[in-house]
Length: 384
Image (cartoon, rainbow, N blue to C red; front, side, top):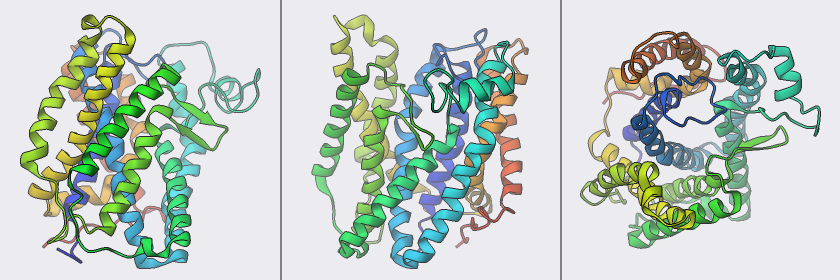
């Protein structure tokens, strides 16, 4: 398969981004939604969606970083420094900064607007978002919305570039090799230690911080993202997914992924009733989250590599629009959820309806965004 397009990577990214849109709408109807979440329907909420959100939240961004690392090192090797950075600037840095400046404040203002808080948009921007009149710097509600990913990705690309300058052999592919059990166990132990340590340090798994105006991140998640990105770099160098290279086993990883799909959300929802103290809960959560992280990571790669390493007109079209769908979705789906708030139906049809409407509008807008220079490079995967 060397030299051939990895269709399954296109399809996996497309799946993850569409799942992300449904996931973000799920938070609007979950029980115990974050207090700051943009639109929350407290009259129609569900514990099931709480479990769904916890499940999806484990793997969607690590896979995004893995794919970015894999293709990041590949394109750096192919295009060289100047053209590579020109592409990063046009497709990542400009959309990151431009999106944050133009869209982050209006989307974040929905937290106040959807709750009928007596705060005008201008007051929100000056006292809550761009500025903190008491402590100085960015405001309490400052956010990059979904563009935090592009900011962190820019830092990872910079680190990758520096590493390739210090060691030029990083741009060379090694002979295909099997990582064996050591890689998977290392990932499991790393995620477990990160979960327990960060919970003890921060005491809040969902904590977001902003480093001035530059980066917005979750301390509990950033180290696994580093691991996932550079595992993508490692996978390219060691020729994973090629004819003779390593491919995760469906038989090995998918059953464990299925078990963790049930066990991990159930522990998040019910675990506190079965332990004597918070530390025991966190310790077991660390084990289950590490197993969920590892099995979902390898399991989804295995499923898509085995069954979806092909394309057709529909998949090709969706793959070409996946980045622009990611880019515009928050500006669209949360107003959809807001306008559906008065609709007096149960959480499930409301979630499905908002997802269908949101996905259709997001797709249409994403098609228009392809005409912008920073997104014009998205191409359809050739059908073979």
